[in-house]
Image (spheres, rainbow, N blue to C red):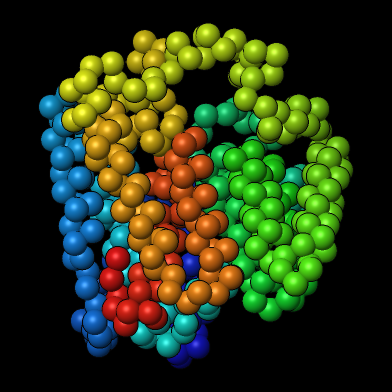
Length: 406
């Protein structure tokens, strides 16, 4: 019975990583279902020792959320999209991470690396499904029926509909998949088992199909791995291995793209991954039009310091912003935005007390995921990334401080 419950929990992990809603029939997300089940189970299990739910940093995040609600309500009479995401971060994602860790570490007596491995297997399995659905129309039809595409900003003829068992696609999805690339290198650095490098290829391909952000992140992870594990005269070897991985991945991406009917549009889109402006254009706009149509910072000093409450998701009158960092500035003000990211930076950096290279690789990778992701869009709040960061920090504190605390 215990083994069966663990299998169910592992399957739940897959659903949580990708926010999967089978057949699109569930009225709520699996996150909320897991939290509900967790509350039902809690009275029947022993409370974990040294668990501190309301840490000082968490209370500070709660105060930020309350402040954001006040500013947003004062501006438009309702909570804007970014503040709502922030509320989900500090309430749903944080609570789910505690329940998640309690289940694995305290009920099933698994270690933190076991959780990493389940997350990695979930992403690797999903990546294979993405590639197969990309190559085979019948498999895509099955996947599309099991996981209907939810709200998105691209049409049904876009190549980004190839997503495996997921209700979403795009750059946020690619960022989630890139976590699998980081974990593949993490486990390879520990075990030197080549199966993790083999798994990296479908992860890279699936990421490339769905978004360029994840592609750039994986390439950065490979470069960092090559640099970190280059002592004792192995720099050339590791550099060549990393370079070979990139070349093989690029060839594989080009080949797989050529097997699809939308190969021309995919290749053109993917070819712009390293370009900010292509002949002074981005998304069909020249540079001036792009800058004029996007918000960067509030114009008034008071809005910059205390927040404007403006909903940058709406692009009202053609003005808005995709960047998570800019959204936070408009919703909370610059000082709170800086403090918010500083809290996460300090927590991630200081959570590792092992001194091992593989943990340092994970730490650097997570910081890149957070800052690069947030620079582009609010991926910290929109994707599995927030939960994974909480799991890593709280799990490490359980190991090194003997406290479940953020």
